[in-house]
Image (cartoon, rainbow, N blue to C red; front, side, top):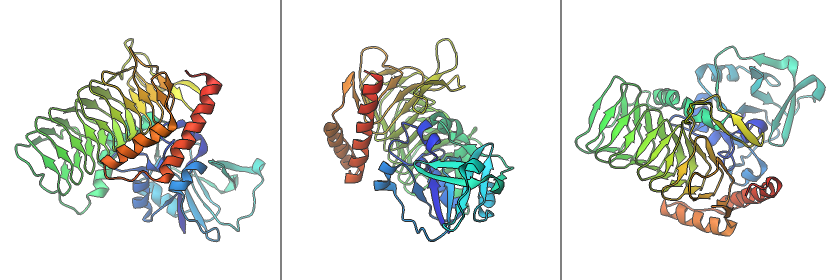
Length: 410
């Protein structure tokens, strides 16, 4: 059996700008990405079925002569859901509340008239499965359908991930002196983790310290927290519950209920709450991000699928920032701000609540200049900015320019 983690076309668009540069399965909530969770619970290495322009980097080999289990990557797996999927037969479709979860498609399966079946759009590759083969999943399902679902799920997912990641293992003792830790939930440290003269409170959730991660002196840390491999929390930081800082991210100041997918920096003072940052982002010194409106009303954010601001149902919602975007020193983000890919944010007063990709203040960021910066940033972390990365950013730039002209966003 082949395994593919698939981007449902409508959900992928609702998860922009985070899915401009990655398949849905590479979103992170809890300690791990959705792909890592699925690989564990399926007991197999799954490939991706994603947007055409992303396949140059994330395409997976597929043998069309063999049956293939296709999974809606936006669902968060657990043992019960994985068992239900494992029991599927070729041609069967697992559903939950009108959303498809998984199906097995064999090349020899007969075609189903679209009027008689369930239509599934996987970013241009369409399937129509018989409605009579649909099975409704009776268990509870968690799903990432909008960017804010990432931080809403994050605290719970840290606990869930910790359980299976550390099963049968014993925590290392963090290096460093002066750590004080109290609370009933576990502190689990991987090899090479360092904690220096800081206070860790696990009374409301666990704390996970990835391989080679470091907490510098004078930090106040409250779980649940995941500091992934190579992550750094700088001196004097105040880290409230519900945070995940992905691999090789740097964090300082005051942060609450936020997720860094990886390789992103908030290395100076300033507040960030109820937020999601992609990879290769940088918040300049003194950047502050509001997560609550002055009138305590419901937060609305830009939705790429509907091309308008939509209600989130949330009172607390901060910054959603795509990969490679950066803010200048002293930037003040308003509640529910969405920033696209490779945007440089600087302005007097509050920037707009929606900042398109490849913005340079109120101008357009030249794609060649953006690529040059990306190469430098990758190199600083010992990574190679490949031709596939450049191709993806060029595609996003072209799409952004077409939409910028259509909506006159500047």
